[in-house]
Length: 372
Image 1 (tube, rainbow, N blue to C red):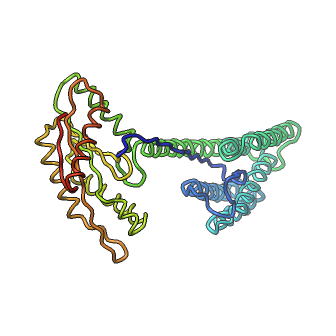
Image 2 (image 1 turned 60 degrees about the vertical axis):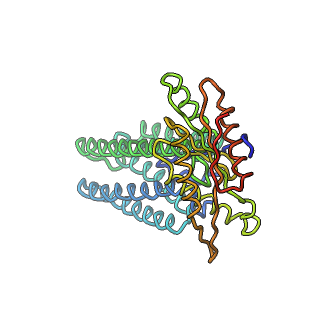
Image 3 (image 1 turned 90 degrees about the horizontal axis):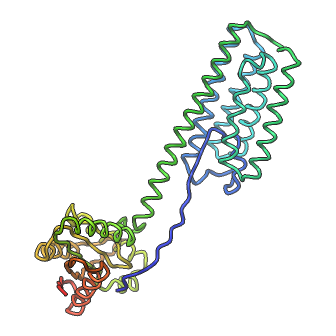
């Protein structure tokens, strides 16, 4: 019954942005298959739908303004977004990315050349910038960002010397400018919200991974120790009884040997779920290691702890784990001790471990208590 082991976590974060057009640079994923993070691709599809809706609105806007060329350009754009949407649904991500990238670059250029720089179509090019740096290697992102900067500057310089090819009235131009500015503002706001939600969820997942055991869903050893030390600090300010209960599944090795490790994992998960349902609300439980569990019981004396332990032992004894027409039953051996003022936590756990050993030596499926 070892009392120490090392835990190591490998974690990662997820990010996303409107730049579905830049997903081609994601070097860790096959562009023909969905990313392992479905919310990222869901964002791409939503942005595809949003961009297509904006172009539908532009079709009617430019028809009303008497600019049929721009109106029909938006029809082509809508068709490209529809096709990109279907490509995403069919997991043809590279094709969808190419279509979106082409549409944004060409549409921004045509809108600017036909109506003028003041129309604000060039704002949509800026949406690529965050996409580059969250979806690609830094070197590739900087290269494409430089290309985008050159494209943007060239378009700006051209419009210093070239008059709009299909100018519209000043009021209409102001309306188009405000519309484009509003759309880009809303897109950035939506993406910022998505990013905040994504990061928040990622932090919650990381916190859960750092504090819980992945198999059983119980607190892991490190977090149990941290919570117990906090409880002990409170004990120093306001002394009260604190009892430790160390439990071990009897003959667990035989379960693995006879039925396989998959069944062993099922047993651990089932026992853990029953333990969570059986302990009191004020107690907390963690997987101590292997088939061992530690319950920390604040404001509890030995008599109360013993009654709780008997209830737990009985609940596990009645538990039946079914799998593939196979039924497995297990029992628990339990050792209990009470924390003594000013002692080290490791000393109290060692006493509980000693009581657990006594329980196993006396025949298992029983509760033993020790004071020293």
